[in-house]
Length: 93
Image (cartoon, rainbow, N blue to C red):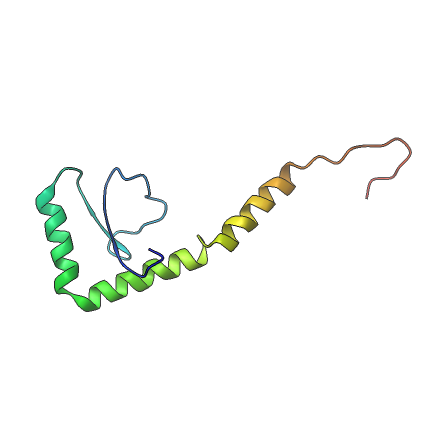
């Protein structure tokens, strides 16, 4: 997706939270070689569709799934679980 190319994947690839069928990928049934060939052929024969889906895939990765967004979510999770030590006689800030 980061390369700006559309994805052709199967229904059990485990990346359903990243992809949106028809928008940035085509999904085929596992083991269905004819469906895989057809999906690849569709993208090969339709350059505008291929470009549009590839652009959508790249934008998705650059937005919510960038390293910056991932790092921010990790830091947020760490901060949410951080426990401040309590000291007697010291007011909490």
